[in-house]
Amino acid sequence: MAHLVLALTVLVWSFSFLAAARLRQELGLGEALAARFVPVLLGAGAYLLVRRPLRIPRAAWPTVVAMGLLSVPVYNVFFFHGLKSVPSGTAALVIALNPVFTAVLARVVLGEPFGRRHVAGLALALAGVFVVIRFGTDKPVDWPYLSSALLLALAPLSWAFYAVLGRRLPAEADPIDTSYALLFVGSLPLLAFARPSTVAKLAASPGALGSALYLAVPCTLLAWVSFLWALKRLPAGEAAAFIFLNPPLANLWAFVLEGQTLRAPFLAGAAILLAGVGLIVLRPATNRRRLRT
Image 1 (spheres, one colour):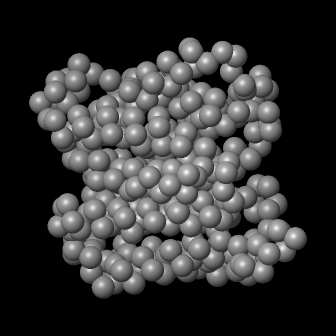
Image 2 (cartoon, one colour):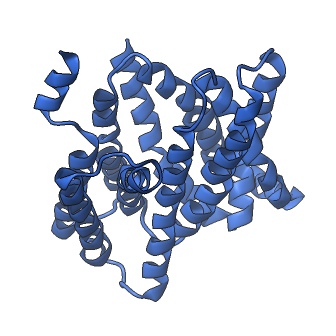
């Protein structure tokens, strides 16, 4: 059951890049952020009202607030800005740098191991993303495109800071309560972008409205919980292996539904990037056997 839940979660997430790109093309940056996160704010707020008492220690709240700001407004400003120019399939691969940045920050901030295998993975991942961005597109590789790709890369970097902060949460902080609390806190600043004109634009565009609701409900309010549920029941390495399906699936949907061209350099760069991420995230079989014994 845990494998099935995780597979369905990754399938839901794999469509998120198409939905976010559609929303970004139809709305301005601030409007897209508001349309995406006002429903999240309402859903997370409803959960927090019903759930009593919240299993979050008082001392953990500063960390929860910081994590909420990093994972919602900071991450998504870079993410939605980048999607204005970067194709959804390429964006999925750039976002795959998340565990790479997390491993580097964990080494710097927390002193976690970062050996030769990790260094090789870092080099491969950066080489792969360079190939994807530079040679894997039929769009002009001009400054607007490159600047959007660079800003997009700041999204997984902000998530890496979020992940490192999350490792400092006390053990008694319930992961589901914490997730909804940080979603609520992080979504609050985006109310500043809510405008009556945004509602009118969404009402006039069923595609944009459906994209906003898809990103808010299945991709966030439900998938975050289902991923945590599965993660509690599976080894971290197995969960990471499922996450590797996200970029290939996102590119498959971009090819099937949007007709995006999958050029040979793009596929080669994607393989190099994912191989590098795999070196960092997945433990060698010998290490897994040692941990079990």
